[in-house]
Image 1 (spheres, rainbow, N blue to C red):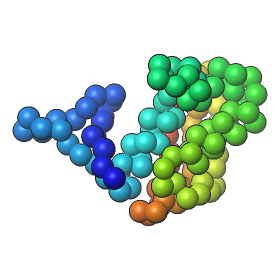
Image 2 (spheres, helix red, strand yellow):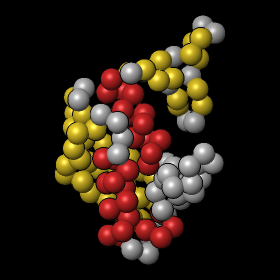
Image 3 (cartoon, rainbow, N blue to C red):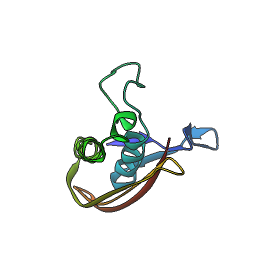
Length: 114
């Protein structure tokens, strides 16, 4: 499968045409989008996204919710060595994991800011 490349929430264009991504790069992009989609934000499906607001009060809930989102991404086979740390001072959440996909492995280290 192929997707249009995005950087900083913008579609990437080169020489007047969209840049495409596939394989591991496409899955990485889907992971970043999933982690940065807040619950109820997606107007076409209000059940999508991560409930960071509720999760900040209950870290176990947040860990479960994030893992569920990662495992729900097409072509993700497993999420291993998962770790989530919440920095209350800076309102950031650091998510690390080893993600096995049908195209290869991804070492995830993503910071989500509230």
